[in-house]
Amino acid sequence: MFCIFWTAAPQMVSASVGTISFPVPQFSAADTNLYQYLPFPMGASVGIGRMKNNAKYSEVVSKEFNSITAENVMKFRALHPAENTFNWADADYLVDFAQKNGKRLHGHTLNWYQYLPAWVTNFSGDSIAWENMLKTHIQTVVAHFKGKVTSWDVVNEYFNDDGTIRPSVWVKNLGPDYIARCFQYAHEADPDAILFYNDYGHEYSSAKRTAIANLVNSFKTRGVPIHGVGMQFHMTHTQSDANINAAMAFAAGTGLKVHISELDVRVNVNKVKHLIFTDAMALQQADRFRFVVKAYNTAIPKAQQFGITTWNVGDADSWVPSWQGAPDYPLPFDANYLRKPAYKAIIEGGK
Ligand code: G3I
Image 1 (cartoon, rainbow, N blue to C red):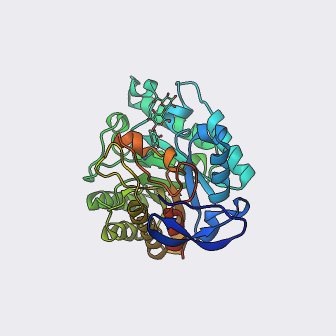
Image 2 (cartoon, rainbow, N blue to C red):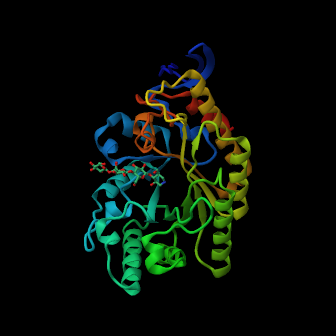
């Protein structure tokens, strides 16, 4: 296994990764910051429990990143658990953290087919009642965070991988064009907010890329306010250069801001139950992080670079193991928040 130590002064030293030796940047705990090495904002999504209860976690977030995304606490179920109840406490905690530490706060997500409270999935109103409910949610949330949240994932994962529209309670009750009204409602509530359409799979589905490009073009033609595309990039350590480049070319072509919004690189593609994270995996994973960051930095014009966000911080914080039912190590920090080879690779990719 590799080991990366904190040392007293910034310097380059060789760290040992099994039998492989390679240089890693070493910094004192006082001056560590990933984002200062990158020419665009570098963020992480954060879990509220760890932010409140794990001092090491919040310290790493504060020192290494200059943008944060709420992993869950700004989703519908978290913010709006009952029809007439909004629960701001957890999200406001992140607002406070962002303001005190000078971090950009990205909002995730105003509309999604998942993580809805039961009162929404069971909602029995007619289309006017559904429309009011959608509009009230979006505008109450955006107004609450106006001036505090820079940007929003307005709609998340509207498309299937084959480019068709995903069935959801929203499409079922409001028709497919409800997505345009989500953007209009958000824009009315905060005209300064940067509004994103967020999805995954750009690196492997040309059909989804085409569907998103068509959506963006239709919004532009109709004057629907959209300012960015979020590409989640939940990827595997075997993803190809060509696929990653295709996603970047698509995103650059939209002319909009581009956010790599949920980056992680999983290595347990075969879902092995007791996987050991080998040095070879660590290096292959680092190579993919480097390639994504480099491709972003070179293919996306500067004015379109909104930044890159990893989906959480350390391997033990990741959603991946519970989702795939098998261990994984998808992030640039290990479970003890020591930097992995992927950390250095991100810096190299940004050069
Ligand atoms: O907070 C409850 C806790 O009280 C309860 O005991 C526990 C029991 O399961 O569940 C906890 O809620 C979980 C929540 O994460 C907070 O940890 C939910 O079950 C779980 O479904 C939820 O998963 C999140 C998932 O979105 C669904 O909202 C993941 O953490 C989060 O990483 C994931 O993020 C999504 C992005 O929003 C969109 N793109 C894909 C990405 C990965 O699925």
